[in-house]
Length: 558
Image (tube, rainbow, N blue to C red; front, side, top):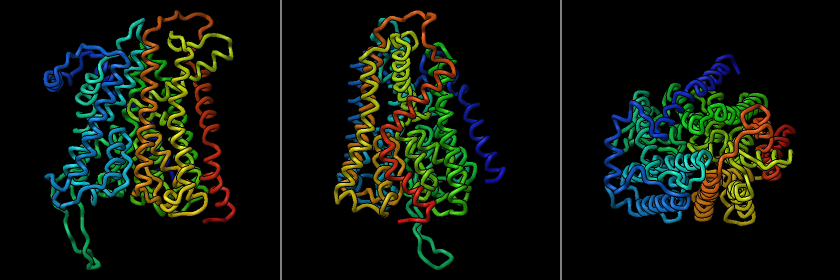
């Protein structure tokens, strides 16, 4: 590792922190309906949508109405993408005449993109038409990210409301998230990516002759528009099979850096927005600090492991931009629920793979997905103040709201749902021929392939370990189910918590109030996060990357 590698890490982290308050303040103005310059440009579109669907922008919903609207909208999105794949051969914008998708794969893909997971059991350039990619997947990239924003906004309103069950309107939150945040940034980012050489066209694939006189098919397509929103919306996935290692998706060092930065940009900024919305920027910064510490420690472990134990091993790494860029991307994409990759995680050292797994197993709370990272972290905040309250013999409180049995039960449900998918579904795969037959490796690395697949599904991440053949009926259906439980098994408890907190009165701060805006709280929060993660997943990790690391340093491989 040289000085330039250190410089890249430093500049990446510095820019992330510097841009956080700028974009976070803009988000605050959008979500709190404050005046801002861009509103004059796009307000006509917002107004037109409300008129079209017959919605009054000041209408309010309680948590159950919000949940029903959210689930109904997402169900329609799932069905639309599912059917679209089944009939894509008969639809336009299919110059390669790609056939219809089988129903198990269509189910998996529809569930994946509807939930902001973007797990892909297929190669995009050989499976999906331009029409399916544009009208199906790209649209879901926008609305699934906006759904995450909406859930987090409901929880924020629940925290700051006083004896009030009104938590906003799902369709208003969805519309504003897309029109004022995701769409403008994606347009701007798409233009920048096109300028760097990312393709954006509707051309048929090109057949060329290589310098070795062989024929090679070069895929084309509207890649830049999907890449912009997949990164900014923490959707992940790839227009092409090799994802952001493909030169048409990620052609230059600048495109690589900007795509890495885009992964964490909105999730990080939303934490600052949270602080502004609850009237305490300091609270937001301390949660931000918690996420930043966890991310940085994970990155340090990955870098140390890769350069100390696998120095000079470049197989599967991003050779154009250097190993350090593979490691920054690996940590960013698994800390956020992004899932895009520019290197094969199966090729990383065992401890680097462990960090990627652990980032996801914690519930995608280290910045996490847009909105999803914050409400996931707030679940752990609730558990932390509950434990702290037990330690000092006081009723737990957070920002003036009592944390009682209902909130704790819902928080635990939000932690258990993805954990159940990760552990139980991996166990099922280990015990069945259908699960074992897809492995490319034996021993602990083969176990890691299965564990990573269901961790990615349960955490709504979408990245793949590589090596596992996931395009089978068994894995398409099991991973698809895991994706749905991992998404809505957390969202519904979070909405219920918001509804409960919203109807509670605010408790004045007293000398006995447990403060949540200092380093003591950051330490306790990190401790709870790591203890819960360690107790839940350490046995599984021991069978995979931990034992593989021990065997590797003794010279044994499978």
